Image (cartoon, rainbow over all chains, first blue to last red; front, side, top):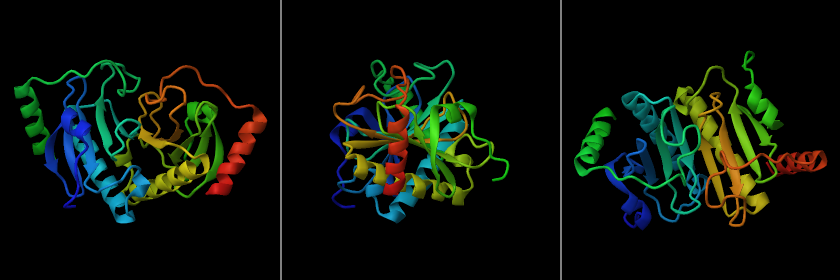
Length: 134
Length: 134
């Protein structure tokens, strides 16, 4: 893992919450939805099936752990989980809390409108809140 | 698994390719993209983390098996994998082959335009092609 380097676009669009084993857990800096991403700290991985089998299992475990915690603490109607990567090819898994009155419900979040960054204090508070929930 | 009942909307929008253990593997009847879905044959499951731990691992295994085969046989640029379920709540995982010249690249497929059903012969041939690839 020494040579792992986070994609620059992911780094710019999100902030680190914590390191949860295989993955960096990051908060997308978009206040329209509670939106986390998990980034496996492995080099040159584009698809989930490019990971070693044990890493695939670990990614599932970490994703579902985060998804369940997010649904519980944010009272979401539904959790959306996805590995898309059409733009940023470094493997990353989205975990997003959705609500029936949210922006673009029931449509997808990707490619919808403009990102709305959090105020700094709100972002720091949410990071702490998520960290406490894990 | 005796009481598992496929959601009616999923049944109407897709056709069975095969049963691969935990999941039904189905082809979405939308010729715009090679688009498979996996439906775990368990009742009353909405989120991936609602599955028993062993089923979570099995779903990962089956999803990645299908995703790798689809990328290989369809020569895709990128595979999109997602569990969204904002409309149909029965847990189902999308596995979609994407291309740089496809409808809505690099945006998501969900909610984009109108479904374009396959001609019957083409659909049957694709089902057979995918089945042979697994």
